Image 1 (cartoon, rainbow, N blue to C red):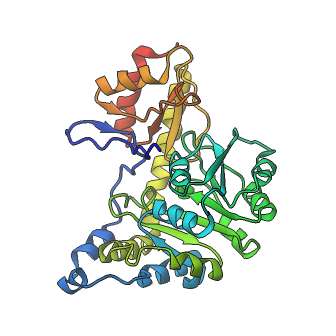
Image 2 (image 1 turned 60 degrees about the vertical axis):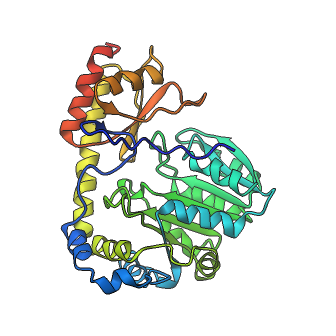
Amino acid sequence: MSGYTPGEQPEAPGLIKLNTNENPYPPSPRVQEAVASLGEERLRLYPSPGAGPLRRKAADVYGRSPANILIGNGSDDLLAICMRVAVDEGATVAYPVPTYSLYPTLTDIARARAVEIPSSDGDETLADRLVAAEAALTFVCSPNPPKGSLVAADVIAGVAEGSAGLVVADEAYGDFADLNTLDLLDEHPNLVVVRSLSKSFSLAGLRLGLAFASEQLIHEMYKVKDSYNVSSVAIAAGVAALDDLGWMQANVARIRSTRDKCVSRLRRSGYEIPDSHANFFWLEHPGRPGEELYGHLRSEGILVRYFDTPELRGGIRVTVGTDSEMSALQEALAPLAPR
């Protein structure tokens, strides 16, 4: 099998890093305070096995019971837990493509069969085609990388309604869009909604994810998670971050504003960029391949993400950074502008 290839984490200083969808702004000051205040006892002893304090805080914030929430070591941990719960060797895992490139790796690890459903923004047949795969587990990522397209809540509801297997709404970038999929949980006991604190809350280095589902499903997922999958440091930081939603929301608003301004300027220069609902966007040049764009920007000290696959070689994925970082990107791309 081919393992998952994460975005480059350079050791050399000085590069503008727009390749792994990290938040360019710091987390809430309350996070730093919470981490600094941890005593030696909290570090010497094992953490809460179920991340109880964070579970309770998330329940208050999102209007759910703690029994409806599972905390993960990043949302990737929760995706793997969903695989363990639902997928036997030889079973089917379905997902639209292009999408998050971890899904095929998780499928290979489980020795399952992947059914990849080609899709595009606004695809009205997507739910029916996913249901027709008769999968043990179906992933639907929204906003969906690498282009940031949104999958409507009624599509996810349609997949959950028509599927006998588990359906995972992967909303790692959900805070950058207007989503209401948590409301679907009351009607669909086979649905799991997964959120991340890495992107919008600026906590990628601590690895925290939230899974929301029925009490029965969370109970089964709890059985197959690692015994202490979330550290005491991460639990304290997560509670503090959720206690300051306003800080996160202000950063999200800044990122969305910067994204829209940058995309508008690059489009006027002739670059082709579909609408994005995330903290990244997809960029193509009508006359140059993505690898050339990637190499040019790398030579200018800017890292972006290039995917060497047939369906994605035509472009690059760009994380939205600060205003000054995006200005540097525009300046670097100006000599190659189509017009």
